[in-house]
Image (cartoon, rainbow, N blue to C red; front, side, top):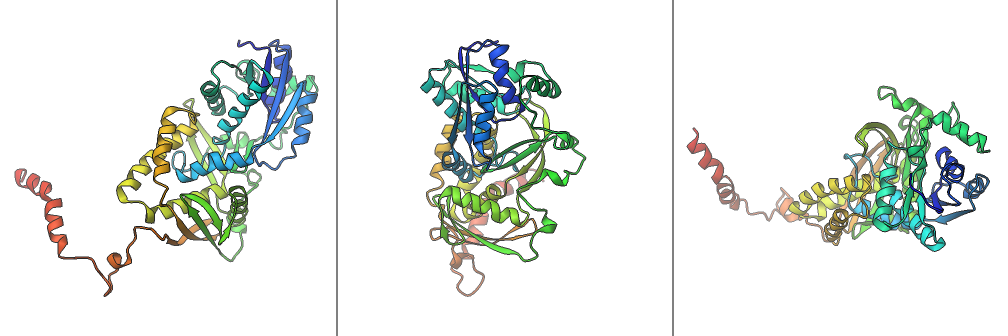
Length: 399
């Protein structure tokens, strides 16, 4: 068991993090627990959460608005990287964890704490993300993980909390584990653990049923500068406002639901439901713009490295050397990713309508089959001869 005198706890107000407070104080002998809650744009009123931490026994309960750094320092790089874990999940929860860990360390340094703590269980991804981020930023701080070691079931944990005056926030009618921030909403547990079962209607909150979406399509235009989204339907917006509006717009038309079996860091498969309307829309637009802006070899290499980048973020290695090295390459590719993309949103679908880039590599005079065609067709014969020389040599030897 890791020991510490003063501990800063990553606090969400849920069952596990709430129970962590009395457990650390009474079972592990911690003298002082400071709760830290991050405002990540989840829309909750955080003052009741702060008060709940104090009632549970925290000496202080701190709340900090981290919405802007979440968007600028974590979401924008993910959009530039087209970060999709296993080709589908835009890392909405994973991107928030290194940010929270960074501020846990910051608060610990300011208060002279010798440890930090979180309420992650032993088979989730977040334990890996918190532990590795903290180890990278402050290897001297003790990391306390009571939920990973106390051996209590979910029911036991709720009962322990109730004995210490902590009401259970989860009922039998709502058995889901939910994480929400500006970038999206993740849902797991309960009936979702059966991969054959269709997700119940009450699972979704941000995105309407495609069948219930408006009967008229809407056209959306997204503008980019250096790979970052900067305009929505022609209006310049700051990154946070743009994401909020993209969430509402795509969600209202049923776009952005994900139901997937993913591979967790610890080696097990998990059924996850995600609602990420804005992130999916912006990444999709970015991919389309890159197709007209990047050279073929750059784009082919970037697609390979994007997958590795997404894996590193998902696996908790945001502050690792390989991820930082990949950032350098990915950022270098974005200098000329400037332009705009148009989509049609209709009942859960997102269909590209057009792309435009002032410095794009698409040349109408070379691509056209009309009279304006400037391509030298006669040059193709020599190109094909050289390109196919190795094939012809092989064929002659192995007839």
